[in-house]
Length: 302
Image (cartoon, rainbow, N blue to C red):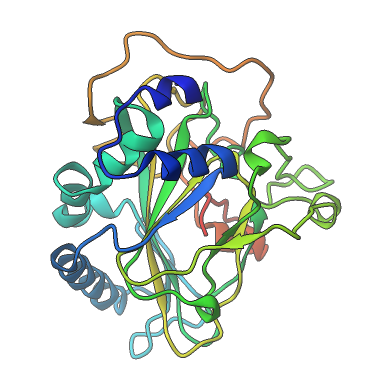
C-alpha cells in the first residue's frame, strides 16, 4: 500500500492533518485514543500477568524477566503474544478503536502481525537503543507500523518512545555488529552519525497511542522514575504487505484481517533487504540482545 493509496481511505478516527503528519514524520502520538473502560480491563489483565510471573524463575516463550526478578519483587520486561494469553487484548484490536486508527494510517485493509507487552519498571527499567523495526521483520512493502498504548501516564521521566522524524525515508541500517552477530540496534558508527537535533519524544496521558512506521529510527531512555511504564504493542500492516521471514512470536492470530478484506495481490517495494537471523525457533527480547545476554535473540520493541 503506497502513501497515495492510503490517502484515498476516508479517516475514521484521525484528522487528515494527523494522517499527513504520520506520513511526513514516520510517527504520531494520539492522546487519549483508548477510553477509560478499555484501560480498566487492560490493566486488570496486566495485573494477572504480573501475578503469574511470580512463579517464573527464568525467561520462557511468554515471559521475559529482568535478571533481578523475584517472586516477592517481580520485574517483567515483556509478555509475548498477549492476545493469545488473554482475550481482552485481541478484543481491543477487533472491537475497540485501535483497528479504525490503524486503517487511517495503513489503508482500509489491515492485518495483524504480532503483539507484545513491554515493561519499564520503576527505578531502572531498561533503555532501548536506537534501532528500526524493519530489520527484525522485513515485509514486501513499508506499510507496516507499530502501535503502542500507554496503559499509564507516560512523562519524560518514564522513558517514552522517541523518534527521528523523516528517518523512515532514509537508509535501512544493519543491526548486526562487525563480527556478524545480531545486536538489535544501530552500530556505534551509525548511531553516532544520527542527527538527533529534531528528535521528538512522545509523552502522553494513559490511553494515548503512539504509532511509528517500521522504517523509522526510534529508541527510549531508561526509566529512573518512581512510576512504571507498561506499554502494549501491536505490529500491524496493510493487507498487501507480506513478511519475508518466519514469525518468531507465535500466535493463532498471525495474518488475521482486523479491518477490511484480505489482499488479492502483494505489493513489493524495489530494492534488496538484509535478512535477520532465522527466527523460526523464536527469540527473546530486544533488551536481551542490546544488553548482550548471550544466547538470546531479540524482536523489536521500545
